[in-house]
Image 1: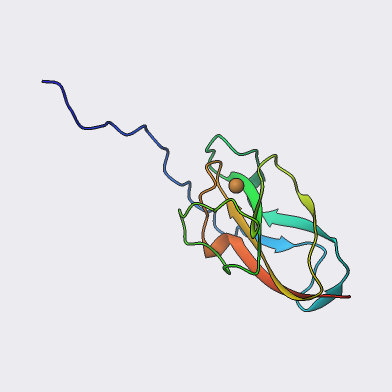
Image 2 (image 1 turned 90 degrees about the horizontal axis):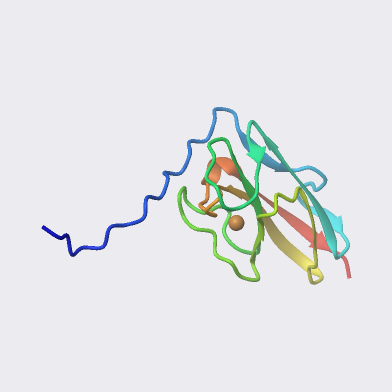
Length: 131
Ligand SMILES: [Cu+2]
């Protein structure tokens, strides 16, 4: 009998986060005073950097959130908008323009389908952008 319900495409599960994996800002400290545009060097332990697209265990790409969440829950899709920047070409550095004043920057790692690896692979700092 023909099944009239839509068969969902097979979407791979979000890969597990390896023990000890973490992300960090390499060149920015919490409460740092900086100038805009801000050069951001992104770092990760125990995971590889890959381009967006394939879902490969132990890999993914970086996102920077500006004045947004401290992390997105595991499996949540990272939005594509002006406060959620994607580095899906596998970039490990970014230049981010910020207005003067205090800003919250979150580094969030996600898989090839932009699904957050959750708070285990996120870190948040506050920076003070000089006038
Ligand atoms: Cu992404």
